[in-house]
Structures are given as C-alpha cells and as structure tokens.
Image (tube, rainbow, N blue to C red; front, side, top):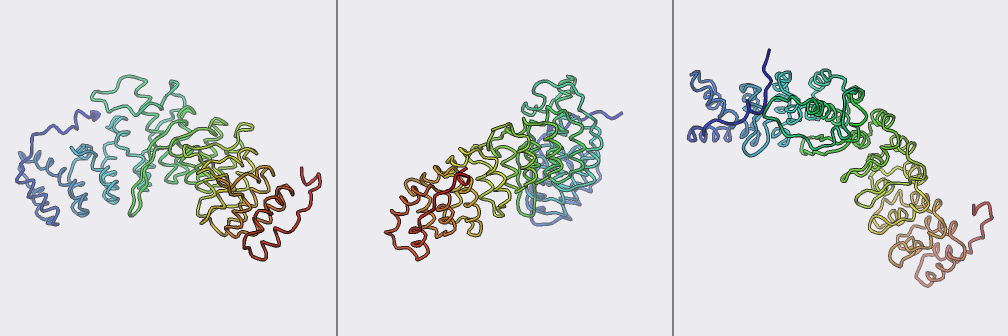
Length: 444
C-alpha cells in the first residue's frame, strides 16, 4: 500500500546547491546548450542522484522562463512526479509556472506525470495544485475524464451551513483525520472541477459533477483559468456565473433547477449577478431561464459598477435587439429611468456619441416605447433634453419616436426652444409638426 504524500515529504529541505556547477548549467539552459545539461543528468553515480534532482528542478524553472521547450520537457520526464510538486522559493510550482508563462505543451506533460501520483496525493494537495481546473483549461480531455470519473457521489455528505464558503484551508503537514475537514476538501475539489469544466465547455462532465454535489455548494465560488496563445487569465466565480459567461445553457439550466429563485440575486464583486454575465455573453436563453425564476417585482439587479444587465447588454460589440427587448420588458418602470453608469439612463446610454450607429435608433425606440412619457421630459444629461441630444447626434428616427410618445405639450415646449438652431429641413419639419393628442387606448 502506498503512503500518501503530504507537504512534509515534498518540502524543499536540502542544503544549498553547488553554486558554481548550477550557475554553469543555468547559463547552458539560457543559451540552449541542452546537450551539456542532459549529460549532467545522465551521470550515474548514486551519491549524485540527490544533487541531480535538486539541480534539475531549478533548471526546469529557467527552461520554462526562457521557453526552452525541448529541455523543459526532458526535465519533466527526468524528474520524479513528487519533485514536480515542489514549490520554488520565488513562489509557484512547475505546473503553475508553465501555465502562467503559457508553456502549454509542457504544462500538459506535467499534468500527465502528476496523474501518476493522483491515487497517493491527499485531497488538499489536489486542491492546492489546481490539477483539475488546469487540465480542463488546457483541454486535456483524457486527464479530465479520468479525474472526474474517480470523484465519488458527494451529494449525501453531511455539510455545515458554510460547507465550501470558507477560504481554502492551508495544506496540512499531517495526515487529515477530521471528518469535516475531509468532507470540506472533497467538496472543494469537486466544485472546483465543476466550475472549470463549465468554463472550458465540458458540458457532460460538468453535469456529471453537478449531480454529485449537494445544493449548498452551488452558492460558492471557485477559481478557473483560461489560456490562449498570448494571454493567461484567472478568475474566481460561482458555477452558474461561469455557465452564463460561456453561454453554457445546459449547465446553467441544471443549476437553476436545483437552486431556484435564490440564484437570481447571487452577487459577486467582480461579475455582479449571473444575469449580468449572461447579458455580457449575449446568451438570450440563459437570461430567460434566470428571469423566469426572478422573485416577483424584483426588477433588474445592479452590480458593483452601478450597471444593470441592460447596460451591460448595450455595450457588447454584438448588441442583440432581442436581448434588449427581453431585459427592458423585465425592468420595472422606475428601472428604465434610473441613472446608473455615469449618470445615464439606458436610453441616455445608447444615445452617447460613439454608440453603435446601426443599433442606436432601434435600441432607443425600444426604451422610448416602454418608458413613462413623464420620464422622457427628464434631462438626457445635466440640462440637455433627450430631444436636444437626438438633434446633436442627428438621429431623426429617435426624434420621430420622441414626438410620438412624449406628451404633446411637453414636446411642443421643448421643440420651441430648439427651433432657433440652425437645423436641417427634416428636423425643422419635425419640430414644426404638431403632435396629435393620443386616444385613451393609445395612452394606456
């Protein structure tokens, strides 16, 4: 039976290395003299084995830093998987440095080596080294599937009121014996995998993990990472927010079904609510699912930047009119006239200079149609009216919509102030036209 690996057995406790030899080898790594390094590693004297390993760990750090891929992968194969768990004095493990430096092929190889030890590593080590999230972000399908398949059903585990909301517990120097601590680690590891699998698009695996977790865990957050050819990013987020950001409708629907209305107002400082994330990704289906479970009269939530999901949807490059219509239907009458981002209402926001010209009139007409006529007489910003702003950005269609939906007396009063300006013939004609009084049915 294999003895579990604890941090006490993988800590860097050796004496200082032979500096002259190590410095020469580091220089060889930097200039690409791989043969010299590999020759050093091939030395067969048993008494030098410990020194070779110690040097190899340091040389791997240099090889990752200078992107010496061939040597880095040779060092990963040379080292025992336990050595790959060591933390460097400057911080981080070999896996973490490979990921953050975007040495992704080497990171995949390190994951393969670490998986050789996964039966021996206690759950805290699996959590600390982010093995499952990094495998998901690196699209290591076979590794992800093998790890997820070994996670047991945890849905019946006894939990406290805060099963995984506590900060991640530090790595233990002793074997874990406390049952609550063991449960905590198992739940954290599985939930961490759920968030990472969701963000990476592993829908089937995410749903499999979701079924293994108690509902109390789904309000927690976990870290996931993303990599591409020139960018590394990491974020801590709940699983529902990750699904909404990536447009993963199947996972979002499964979480919403389990959590119900309480997930509507679940808020994080960076992302706001899941509805903000869905508006950002343009996922109409996820927005509908969230709005269907919203408490009656809840209106649209506001994030830490004073933005509603409606404001978020408006600023996306592929602003979708169907989504704008859906969110504006869900906003309360007062919500459409609330000034959030920079002091602008949603109507004011889409009339800003530089807003997408092809969507400006369509979005504005949606808001004008739904707003209280009294709100249309309020200033666009400071003392400038919506009608004056429409003239400034030369949006004749918005002016026509304002003429149709504003109270006739209010429109005439504002038009009288603006007629003295040097305007085009179309604008002069619009401002001189007397709006007809609406019937009772139209007013309703």
